[in-house]
Image (cartoon, rainbow, N blue to C red):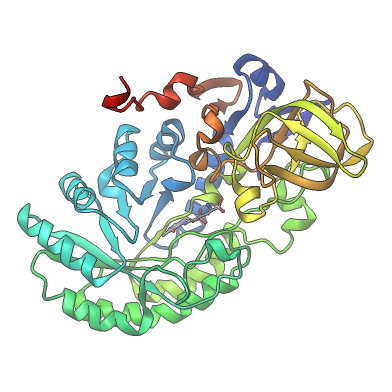
Length: 432
Ligand code: LLP
């Protein structure tokens, strides 16, 4: 669900007109709804209430300081994948003791930072990483809390680029090798075996793959708990959201849309998984990113030109693949709606950005209300893996971001000044 809806012909984010925001702050502009992300956090948190649990928001999905601050205030923990993310979380008021540190390539500097700040756990992805953490912890006279990421070899039934839990992927340690590895890790003096972790992929829209993976690892977790006294089990993130039209169908409530019929809800997720997990008696961690913020953000863009070539109807907008790369990278679908509804008549359109690549498109041959120069469009469900994946390609500034809360709106990231794009660059000495 989300709090973006039309009042009359105007798109609103909670109580704030999106067009007014676009006029005031310019475009491309990310607009986030605080009520939406809070709602998702609370819904999932409540569904897991029967278990002792900690929800660790996957910072990679949206690392804006204001977003992290809102989640920290709700009691969220954080799933981080770099030293930079750890520092961001701390800057936003998050607690390191509620952070889990994931990733296949943690550097010595990142591990030292995390040890000094006292993260809840390192989610470890290989034996050499365990040895490195042990060595660095010894040097700092600390004991490092670790969990190994088990690769359960379960197909997540999602896009290949966001599947992580099979042996085709670089992630985790093979299911069959885990127990031997824990036994070896137990002999490393500066480690504490605190948990077991898994994550099978992202944008998983049915509970089936989660259930299959949980059924597979529960007996393993049981044995590891008995052998090493584990404290928690993390089942990762990956809960999918609805990207398909809900707004166009007249309802902003995605669970009322046709596409939502089969969709995973927090209730279903908990109903199927809690009974499997409860007998373990372990603390449960989950690491959702997209589910919390995906529907909570939109990317607003202005139509620059409309161009027809006899075959195609191109709507050229001022946002591009550098602002939102998901359609170009994953063929991802984002619903596109007019910020002010004027015309009912639709025309098959390619909405494209100004970047010099054919991959720079947001949709192809999609029936959309005819749009004219100067009008604004909104790319829906862009709150997760949107601004965080933005780049300066074509020397385009990173977009501004606004957070809305009820009738209030605040710029939570200024548009990057163009000179800042090359501020770290300099001529070589022989060019001066
Ligand atoms: N935990 C781990 C270990 C992960 O690797 C990820 C995401 C998450 C949690 C959070 O997954 P989520 O709940 O957001 O599905 N850029 C892609 C998604 C990449 C996901 C990477 N890992 C996209 O735009 O679809």
